[in-house]
Amino acid sequence: MQKQMNKKGQVVSNSLVGGVLLLVVAAVVAVVGLSMLDGLDDDFAPNSTEANASDSAKEGISNITGKFGLIGTIIVSVFLLTLIVGITLIFRNQR
Image (cartoon, rainbow, N blue to C red; front, side, top):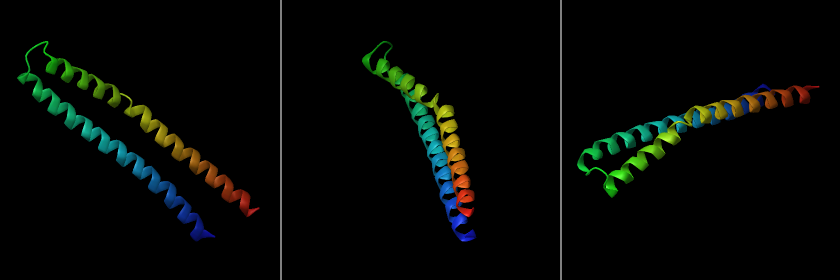
């Protein structure tokens, strides 16, 4: 019985690590993308189509990265809910 409980715990733990790792990779990609767009702004004429497109892209990426805190909260909440349900089912089956 102990071996099965460890496997269930490992699955939950691995999914949490995967979710956190995905969030970190997305944040790094967003930061690198914003840095590249910021470097390109100097090459564009003010109020040109390219400058406006670059500004819109930076605004969109900033909006997405602003939601990372909420996404992280959801990942942790799902992990905790899964853990609570798993523990409840394990103790229910032991009765």
